Image (cartoon, rainbow, N blue to C red; front, side, top):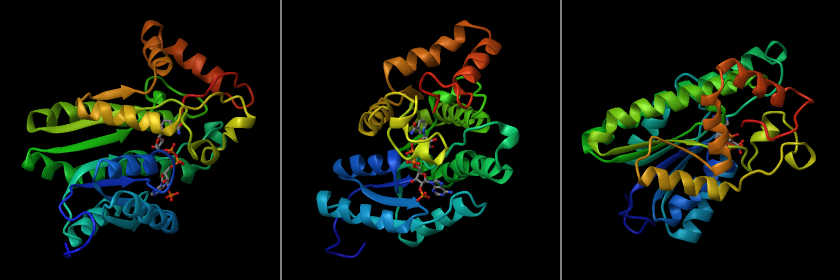
Length: 275
Ligand SMILES: NC(=O)c1ccc[n+]([C@@H]2O[C@H](COP(=O)([O-])OP(=O)(O)OC[C@H]3O[C@@H](n4cnc5c(N)ncnc54)[C@H](OP(=O)(O)O)[C@@H]3O)[C@@H](O)[C@H]2O)c1
């Protein structure tokens, strides 16, 4: 690293989906803790704006990578980028993701498949780029964004719910594999949270629909970082969401699926949807 750069001897975090919502807040919190940040998403202008803010407010070093993580070669491109910069990643926040809402048969097939590529394939790939090095160093931290949608099937957010169930199972297994090597892995499972998620998913403006109160992004991220520090395999953000996530264990799976379908059916929502 060039002499005189900000953030000279600090550890590095890599945050995917840092251009908005939960990812941007992770970047701000980690920078406040003194970490340099590699910011990844597609909207370069947003990333550059955030990078400038982090350096100005916290004196940390930053790098920006504008990359569509839904393409097959993305994980290797991310690793090539950090290697070319001579950066070792201490903390990986695998956060980029999106959902869709509607009848599966009516949703765009390419958009559904790309969701699997981003929410699952890229997350596995990027983990695999950095986890072996963390294991070898016997230190490192990984957060994966799952969701309360991971705990039961989600009709009308069918593919999304399945991707988040994948993320939760994948993260818990990785936690078990890596804990003896000093590498922390946590799946963060938020309920509905303030971000651009609902607009992207076609769920509308939460303030004008029946989505209900959204959790503040800062609180969700704080809970994720606390769980990561304690090396908890997963954390559900908020007691209400935790009760909802656990309650599905006490009824037959088809009952939980039917209730979720009732709540998520377009036009029939009366409570916050699983996000
Ligand atoms: N908000 C919620 O209620 C909620 C609840 C549970 C879980 N989550 C999960 O939390 C994570 C973050 O979502 P959010 O709520 O913060 O939503 P958001 O505000 O829409 O942010 C999504 C982020 O992902 C990035 N992204 C989307 N597609 C991408 C692609 N193909 N390549 C690279 N980056 C991409 C977006 O950046 P660009 O558009 O610039 O690429 C953006 O930075 C997601 O995994 C989501 O499933 C959200």
